[in-house]
Amino acid sequence: MESLIYSLNATIPVFLVIAAGYILKRIGILNDAFVKSANKFNFTVTLPILLFVDLSTTDIIADFDVRYVMFCAAVTVIACVCLWLGARLFLKDKSLTAEFVQAGYRSSAAVMGVAFIQNMYGDSGMAPVMIIGCVPLFNIFAVLVLTFESGSDSGAAHIKKSVLNIIKNPIIIGIALGVIASFIRLDLPEIADKTLESFAKMATPLALVAIGAGFEGRKAVVKINTAVIAAAVKLVVLPAVFLTFAVKMQFSEQELVALIVMLGSPTTPSSYIMAKNMGHEGVLTSSTIVITTLLSALTLTFWIFIARYIGLIA
Image 1 (cartoon, rainbow, N blue to C red):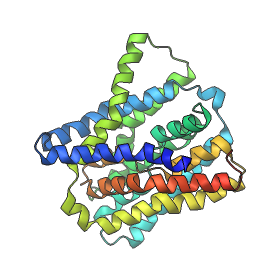
Image 2 (image 1 turned 120 degrees about the horizontal axis):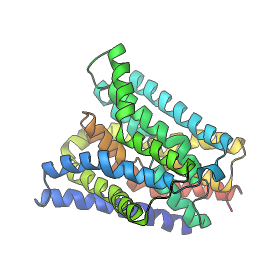
Image 3 (image 1 turned 180 degrees about the horizontal axis):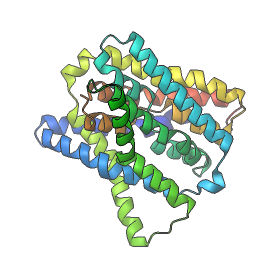
């Protein structure tokens, strides 16, 4: 019951902020211009700063575990590749491939990973190490799939465009600068720290409001079956497959909790922002975010309960 209450407290407020954005748009307080500007602002400013702050304030050297980082990275690559191949083979509407793949694997790892482990153990523990192993790859694969499945260009042009998009991607730049700042133990003046923290705190709520305001109910209903499949992959299939391997590799306690969040947390709002900013419709992505946010309280609690039941989490 304690795990269920914690999960509900973590996920229901997220859904309510999305719902608030939807209502505010319908009563005329927000409009399409706000949604477009908010998505661009989040993509280029607040989300990169959030990731920079999270990583730069973490002692990566002290917590670094090569075996664990490699496992997180391998899981991310395998999940992305399998989803991409599966979508190309079985998805009827090929125009939805990029959004389906991205919504199916990208977790709220950077935000929820730290929160969950701090709640259970009192510190961020292995969450920053998990973030290093998966979040950069989350974003690199997102750029690749959103570029290659854009319906324009081909062959060498796709590769060139993908490389440029990765290099120029603000979120990836934020991650790279955050890792560098952590390694060199960058100590910014207090004024700079507080300024960056203000922008970082803005990222998630603004992204959620924009998702709600930009949510298109009629289009979402048409694509609901695909969104449900993506949500099932995100919350059930990936955790069931890869947590089994994690247990066999004897990961437990904070390591396992971080993996549960990496694999089973809701689809991150930044996936919607990236999809919209790279020329995709975003309806499937926003629908999957809403569904995974609603259901993850139950599924995350289930995975934590199972881990506790078999003695892997104290």
